[in-house]
Amino acid sequence: MKRFTFMRLSLWIYLGVFFAYLLGPLVIMSATAFNSPAFPRMTPWECLTFEWFGALFRDERILNGIWNSILVGAGTVVLSVAMGLAGALMLTQIWPRLRATYYTIIIAPILIPGVVLGISTLVFWDRINRMLGLGADSWLSNGLFLTIIGQSTFIASYCMLVLVARLQRYDVALTEAALDLGATHAQAFRKVLLPFMRPAIASAAVLAFLASFENYNTTTFTFGEYPTLTIELAQKVRYGITPAISALAFIIVVLTVIAALANEASLRRKELVAAARQKATVAELESGRLQLPGFFRSNWAAAALVAVACATVAVAGTAALYSPAQCIADVQEQKRLEAEQRIQELLRQRELRRQEQLDQQGEAVPAPAAPSGSSSGFGGAFAPGNLSGNSEAEPEAAPEPQGNSSGFGNVFNPNALSGGSEGGGAGD
Image 1 (cartoon, rainbow, N blue to C red):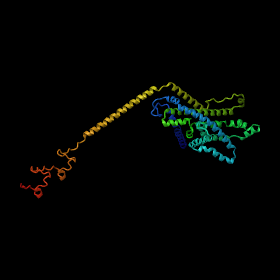
Image 2 (cartoon, rainbow, N blue to C red):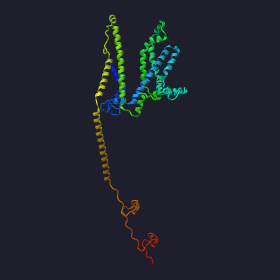
Image 3 (spheres, rainbow, N blue to C red):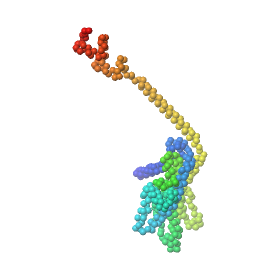
Image 4 (cartoon, one colour):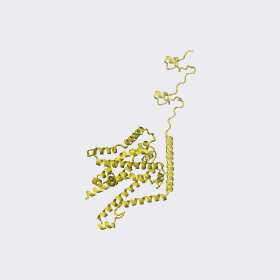
């Protein structure tokens, strides 16, 4: 029992860590859209504001990028779903020995890097444009056309995988029965196969649109004069990001959650209706008085959808009535006071350091002065007492005789030449 409890607790911890790692950045980025600083950050929290949503809707480049992304996505959906459906039908009807080879060829674009696809698309259609003798402004050089073609080369493979999974559940006998009853191949496809494939076609279309909307690697080489949303966001991040991008991320997250909950609520309602029809009696079915379950009955997705919708309306209503001007002014005043305090503290520290340096210079012991009679620039290093090794000064030498006017310091004095220690009398 304890082991089962430990395993269950470990599973919940793992799920918590996994979803925190998966959804944590989205939650943090969405929260930065409501903080007042000009750079997106969650902490420290300053003021609740909705101005970044207004800045988002006033940004012409972002709006133009969204419009271009929608155009590219619509064209990619049409082309990719058509190619994917054709590839799926061919895969189910081709000779079995060629099926593996054909499948590999169709899936290959998924494995090729998007950069290679973008460059190859640009080079290929540029060559075609030159071969046809068209100018640089022809439709073959149009960024919208090149982007749709480049994205469809690999998105069609995703659509084919979705449609093949649906076709594997299709009973070919239905088409054969329609042909036996006199229908043409086009009528059998339109009235029998196409209604069966409709859910898969819708799923493939949604997948193709989302893959096209978020694509960057291939689009960066082909967009030309039609930059998509991902291109504009990349350029904004390169030259300076603002919380308006966080506001866009929050809107995308909310729309994704609403769409997912709406789809889940619809599926659960269909399941409940099917279960109610199975339990109903023949009389109830014939009379049409079948008690169908309500929208919220055993349908948590519907309740969550309504809760998210109410929260969205509440946020929109608060944004229309709330003004963060006073809060922002108070924060700016507080920042100004903090900046002044920091400046005063720096000035005080600088003054203290300067005073300490002056005190250290005043306490320093001065060096001993040189003898007053010495004019040598060597600090008395060659004084007679230093050369002889005596610590005390030598007595002054006897004055020279007044009659001696030689400038050679008595070198040629007769007594000096004779080596006498005392001076002899020289005759006049």
